[in-house]
Length: 136
Image (cartoon, rainbow, N blue to C red; front, side, top):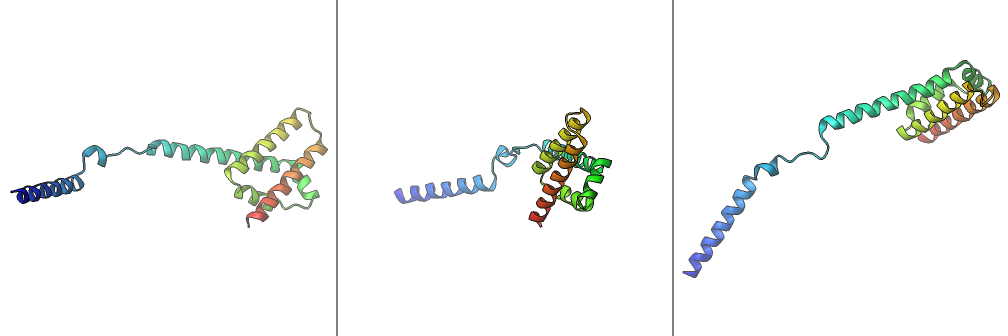
């Protein structure tokens, strides 16, 4: 009799385990994601827009007549600088964009002279070229 009871318990346990794994509860199958796909998409778009804005900021800085002249006088290829800008990481690009924006504001406000801005242009261009060389 004890043997029949043990077989019954084993069979019952086996059936229970099979049914639990074969048919999981609905809430376990429909788990929610940690990040909602719509929020993720919105964040990707926002990040892309910030990167594009920063890239435009840096490219506009180097497109100014004074910057163009400074680059030519220093024998720095504008194409190399633009290539370097496009290869920067988001963090590097944000830092360079902030520096170029500050330099432009300081120049417009009279806080720095033409000569200082030329030096800043050359310094940033050299940093960009070095970053490009290291990445290649």
